[in-house]
Length: 146
Length: 418
Image 1 (tube, helix red, strand yellow):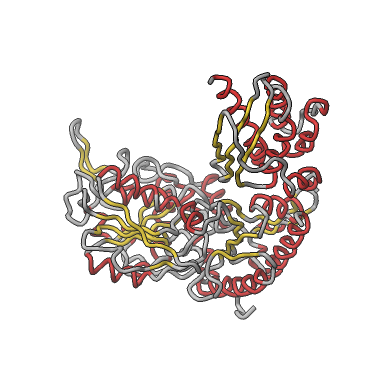
Image 2 (cartoon, each protein chain N blue to C red):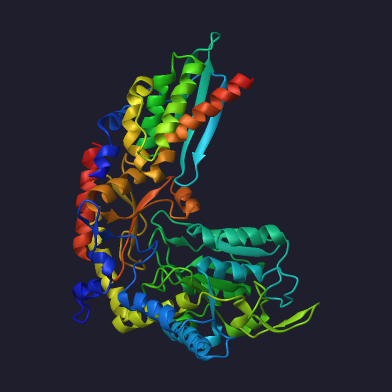
């Protein structure tokens, strides 16, 4: 069934045991993003270290398993990497999500986030997966502008 | 079945989509009629036949097709008028949906071209709605309040999903009260007579959003005693693109036109116009002709079955669902847990599982169509402190077997997220 390809075990794992959840200090920028079609929302904070390394991505929000698991995977993939590295992961994830299921995922870049490949076939759910990632991109851009 | 004349299996055969197979060989279990209903063959065929053989513009073409179209369009108005017990066919205004009907009425208040004292509205005057309204019965009144400086007030909702008809919400400054006849989320049927009595004491007009009641119950607008009633065709086995405003004739006479254009005029000069009498005053431009005719066919279909029988069948489904859903662990019903003054719309949450995940798995795995989200009633969900619910809504073609399938589906969803 279609649903089983979307609800990958890895997604369910992240949903049940979210990594890095909860808002933490210190942080440079905080953003709040909402998906008006379903009411999912996320508050996300980014802390960038002196060397341009992401020291922490903390978040809180409510939403479906896809949106919550995506935030958890985002936290894992970004923390400890440089801003530049993380932005290329965001770009690759966005490309995968917007590829209508026709785009092959680059596992080297995306790591666990390849589990979301099945979501790309459901246009109504793509925004769920992208919610936290777009919030993260927004936060990073804003903190760079500070 | 309690009713011997009501044969749900025979009714299901009238709706071709109910026997289709979804991709992957799943059968369709359609529990989303509160959102939009399916259409019987008679409606589809009436519309096809009209488009194919009789179609022309209405009210203006002086030829055979023009007269056939006009006759069918106006005939649909007669059918709708009879269906809702309207004292006059001229009190039935075709709109594109219930939202347009609500906006049309809101537009007639606090409008400089309307000097009738019942419609004057300014700072200090009040508009009263409720917390359980669909956005279409909230936003037009918010816009009216913003335009005029009037105050928007509302009845609250009790913990078990009933309208809290508290004293003091309606005052002598209240000009219009607009509430749902039946909630599109809770299923609650509101105490119209109680609200009407309060409104009448205050000299206020009363509007009902009957989008969720007219399709499911015998509704008699004259018997209800209210001033305005809005509903829509697509929720009552008719097509989308056609809605209805019923209003008392003398009020329609007092109200200004909402949209200007062809067909709503009597005479036009370069600097002014006079208007056609109601209902045409409110039907500017070429109307949704075939949609109106389709609604007429929908009314014929429902009348043929009998609205009392439809109501009784849905009551049986609701009783079954209240029992069956009540046994799902972690399921919280949002709305009345008893059959009293409630229709066949059941919204609920499942502990720890987001409604979008519930809906997705029910659809993907079992072909069960429910609605998930806030159902265009966000303030009501805020009232209950939840972002969204899963909603199953029944109609004349649903079966207790489909409700059992839903319950099995919910157990499966819980297994996935256990």
